[in-house]
Every structure is written in structure tokens, then in C-alpha cells.
Image 1 (cartoon, rainbow, N blue to C red):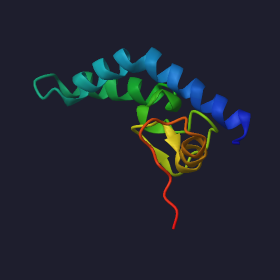
Image 2: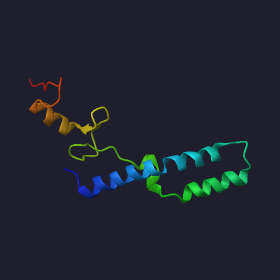
Image 3: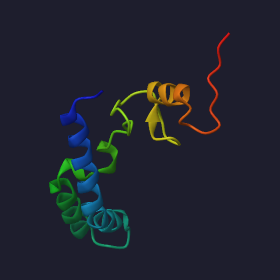
Image 4: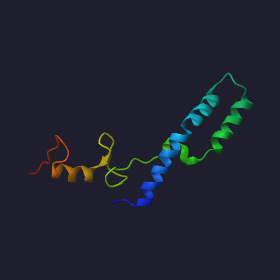
Length: 101
């Protein structure tokens, strides 16, 4: 089980990304627009840099929804390989058969 503080920090980042997504997108559109004056684009770039770093989508870490583990994460299932194996052994994941030889 991952530290609760790490999981909560990641959840705060997710909420902040949702809140600031529209503003970041608008600023990036201004920055990338070639027909606007350079001064206006530069001001938009400064505003974007002044925004909280945790509002960037890149800062979000994929974590297992069951254990909070940050590594060996399957995106499709939203869980780690270890949690998947345990739930598979219990028969909780439909269609998953644990192989043994």
C-alpha cells in the first residue's frame, strides 16, 4: 500500500489540472498564434509560467486505484500488476485466468 500522502498529493494535482485546464489551453493558444504581436504572446507566456506547476497535466502520476502503487500500472484496468494478480486469483476479474505450470 502506498503512502496516503502520496496518493492525496496526486489527487490534489488531478483536481487542480481540471480547474485550470481551460485557462492553460487559452494561454497556449495565444502563445502559439503567429498572427498576434510578439509582446502579447510574451505576456501570455509569462502568465502561463506564473500558474501553479501542479496545474500541468504532465505532473499527474498514474497510480493503482486499489493500492496506490505508482509502478507497473495497466492503464486499461487502472491498477497495478500485483493488485491484478491478487484479484485474478480471487476470481474477481472476469475473463482472467491465472496460469501455473
